[in-house]
Image: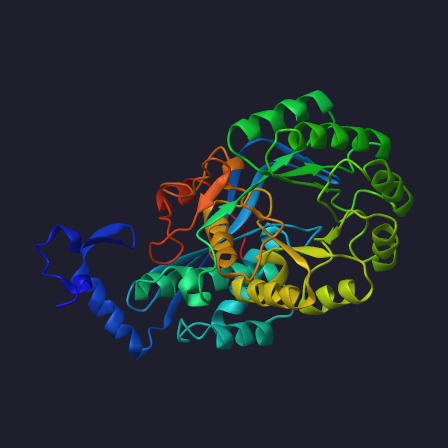
Length: 411
């Protein structure tokens, strides 16, 4: 008899399934039964508002609370999966209310479908509704969590071969106070972080450049390799962006993300041509076509990929593979304020991506309160891959309900 199916009295036969202890033999039977095609019974969109430890300051936006969509998908046999997407009106065009309405609109086209038919579900969502990539991503993540739990597999195993088990997490540094940023950077370094992102586009190009140079000098002088990037979040016009890259040309900056407006590819290309610092695209990347256009125009040498922009984990992985073919660098990222649900999902896709030279950004550490029983842990600036079934985290549904926001449903 295999180790996974030992008699129920053996201590190793107890697992946590759907938030409770069950005999591993029961898990094995569920895995065998999965071949019968477990179907989607219910999809519930849940709006939550989560407190941040401190506001996150970016060009054009300050995130003081995290207004996120959670999606709870239940199969006919009672297995539950969870997904998440942050509201991001300036990035995806979606608000919390619009994502709630989108999930309600999409659900009739998915109810009764086989839960592991990911391609079929994606096609059905697109047929039912154009766009709404964040809402679709939350559903797709929840289905991967559900299928992983039902089959006893972590999500990364549903996506492909594991490439890495431990990943460096980008520490985000951002204010208009240079002294505070230096203290923050030093504290993060001492905590084990070796990858950093400095938020710019907040003040004048000269002030942002001086702050960037100071942080780079501090970090690059530590005698150990590290990755230091800057992110303007579309905050500069082209002339200001050019002034900034000229001022930081020799400070050791490893890449500069989204210097100008997302769809101004000519301006992106002008900035890229003016500096040896690799330029990255974030808000301008919503599809494989976007990646190819940036590459063809020499507008970016790398990209930041988010499930909410591309519509799910499989689309992110496909984009990673395209970037590998084009020799473009990749950062896999969550949106500011996303909880351990989205952060764990990003971790799983990062584990199977061909390369993540520009690191992994998980955002649940910025929350004062998470929805997970045990939030995803960043230790010594790194995060370890979760090997438990599905996302590998347990959602505290009581906490979810306490943070749930009510919306009037549209018929």
